[in-house]
Image 1 (cartoon, rainbow, N blue to C red):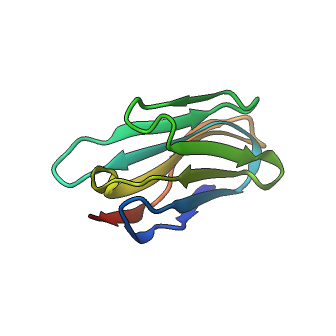
Image 2: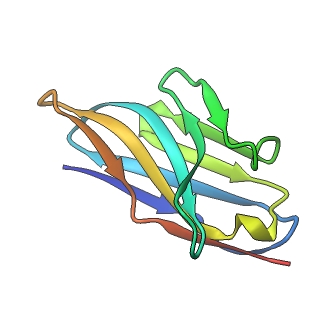
Image 3: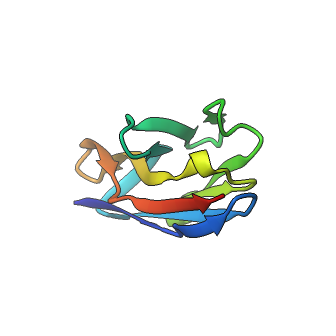
Length: 120
């Protein structure tokens, strides 16, 4: 009923930048908080950044000052601008969103993930 599709991952050198996108589609009435998580090999999934429907943001300490989360409510899309990338940013990045369907049902939805590899 609701899908999140990420794009923008890839291979980049340390110090470089990447921009991830995540678009929500389906029978969506509203999208509330949208989040980016990441999971590095052998590690637990961690919250990277969150943005509310009103635009308030919060970041993990490890990415503050380097990553910027933003959203386009008209497109139900969230972005993650990643600058000054470090090798420790290498991970699979996942989009997550709280959505409300036209039926009134609230769903928490995950994307399929996109890989980010930072070479040192």
